Amino acid sequence: MRTWQQAWSEALYGEGGFYRRVEGPAGHFATSTHGRAGELLADALLRLVDREGLRQVVDVGCGRGELLTALAASSRHTHPDLGLLGVDVVDRPAHLVPRIDWLVSPGGPDLPDLGTPTDTLVLAHEWLDVVPCGIARADGTGVLRTVCVDEDGGEHLGEPLADADSAWVARWWPGPHPPGAVVEVGRPRDEAFDRLVARTGSGLVVAVDYGHRAGTRPLHGTLMGYRTGSACPPLPDGSCDLTAHVAMDSLRSDAVRTQREMLRGLGVDGARPPVEQAHGDPAGYLAALSGASHAAALTGSGPGDFLWATRRVP
Ligand SMILES: C[S@@+](CC[C@H](N)C(=O)[O-])C[C@H]1O[C@@H](n2cnc3c(N)ncnc32)[C@H](O)[C@@H]1O
Image (cartoon, rainbow, N blue to C red):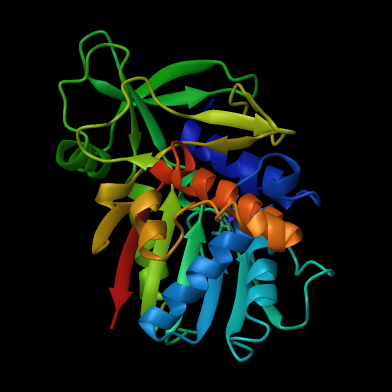
């Protein structure tokens, strides 16, 4: 039996791993980077780019380039020179517009050489939740032990946590841990975020994910599978996504804010268009109404509770 962290890595990024499939993540679940929500997110990110005086966007863990495609469309006239670079574990998808560059990544916590981009918005949207981390469960005496798993999802308790993980738990997810309590040890996510910051020449690094902060840690663990649009039991056999919420406050960022706060600060407010517009400009009214409902979804409960960890690289 392997530890969950080992089995998870193999299942997502090994040969034939889940994220190497042609359909990509969008074939299995929707995120805020898809469809009309993705267009609104792209517009908000362009405002962030302007506010920070940046000239390139690097999207790490970009799926098949959905958000970059929205960024390319939105910025066509306003920011024609904005650089766009996608990073993911597969080759560059053929459908991307020529303006979008691409780098292949090893996957998980590892990154390729990004070329130390300067004046760049480096975005990682739902990357860290798929960086495998250690799963620990408290045994009958409250000692945290590494959880091991077989291909069928059967689990058993292994060794007590190694020192580095115990130190992380003591700092970020302190006990008492009652028997059966689960801790998802965020150290590999912290290190992955550090790596991303270290590979950024200058600009703003932003990790967006569902997660928790001290005081709101889950008691029973959040590891889940996703397959063809539905949640499923986490099976480390390459047939499904494997994801666990991120301890966002342990990342060495400057600030952690909710998506609601961030997007409202970037002008996404979900306000409905005035109803009088429906008479003079029915098509415009309907488009604005649809935009408003997507904006409300991005900032409402669920997506609005996503956390944005930001780190400025001078
Ligand atoms: C949950 S999906 C999110 C996709 C997209 N960002 C979105 O929000 O729809 C995670 C993506 O991260 C990619 N990924 C995982 N580790 C990576 C790494 N080290 N470098 C680049 N991409 C990575 C996966 O292949 C997958 O496409």
